Length: 172
Image (cartoon, rainbow, N blue to C red; front, top):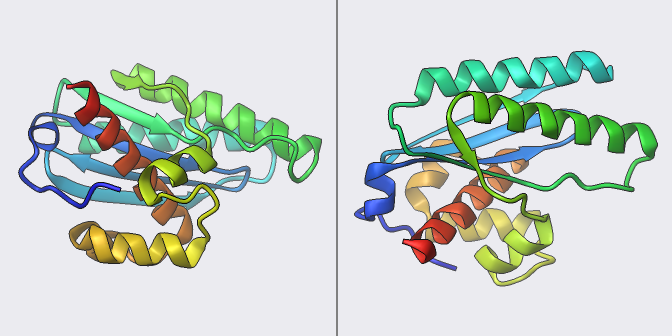
């Protein structure tokens, strides 16, 4: 539950991204040496197209915004067993394709984080709902909130980014 710290050495020397992936949507929020950027897009309906689309989107976006040699990615773990077999397969394949794209763009992909874990670490409540997430970011990370707005997938990505920044601070 760390409040925003704009003078952190972590933020001045690294590019850090948080990614929230589903079977239908991809959302990324990044802190690029102190500048916040985000991207959100819908993915194709079929598995092969969605996987390739996600991979290409991440590679193009990372090439456009990456300015540092020290790049870190924190990705939410796929939620399996919800929505049926096809949804689980699609989400897992998309997650793998996105991780491969990140690695190809020289990002260090940290161990996947479950949604209940990042919620507990960042918000103090592993079962936080959408309103609690939005309120927390609005109250504690105003600069980030002004950039990303109210899209829930982007909010989740922002929390994953904050989780990643906290992890990097702890390990520094």
